[in-house]
Picture 1 (cartoon, rainbow, N blue to C red):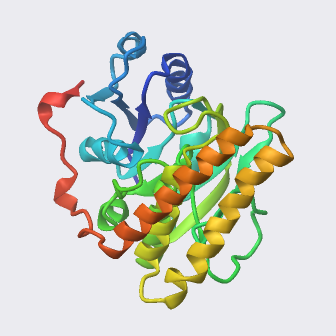
Picture 2: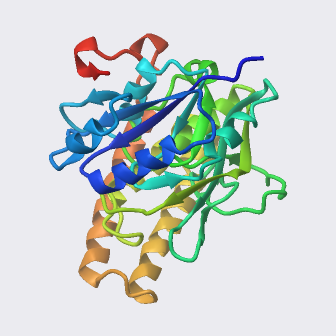
Length: 315
């Protein structure tokens, strides 16, 4: 049988040095039946110069930053692959990355496959066989042979994930509401709820450099507004109809994140007291917004929305 065609989608914004090494790592893959799609910016650095070095990739230019989910959907809109893989612009892939992902789709019940993510220093594990619970709290590292606990869902991480295209479209793609945080987890939960499996493949390896961005100043100083908003919305959207989704689960999630930032200030000394207060204030505002949006959720995105104007696509 012919090998599946893979579309590799990279969303980038003002990270030309990282993007350059990311694209080079994709070009070194030992799996050759693929295309590369870059959803750009609008970057204002030397990203265009980097893209010119790779004249066989597809580039989609954005006029503004709509968030990671919307950007990924733009890439999906032109993807020709049977399998669609995602990697962040500040990451590099092992030479066997695509081959390892593709070989994991032998079972037709598998809707998505993700791999392990290492930090560049001392090869610390950043993600391995992660899960998320019904309170919207994710656990990034879990033993590959550990069984799922009750109320847990298997997830991939955005910088090392792939999905069967037909399943991705069936699920409605990424929800544009999630501009940052829980974007890939929300998709994985919907795929599982649709009756398909999310598989972890430890041979599919990515190195993630965790560069600063619009929502991440450091691992301890994050965009708390988006985090709190998205966690509450994630709970109400995916597990509606359960009284705990309106009471216990949001309360647990807010306490968990409140403790996370408190430890960053009091023990790790990674943020100042003023930063902690600002994080809490913005987090409360985000939680309120998440509740509002969760109660008045718009209709799910339809497949026909996966289109991008031809004028925005450059080959």
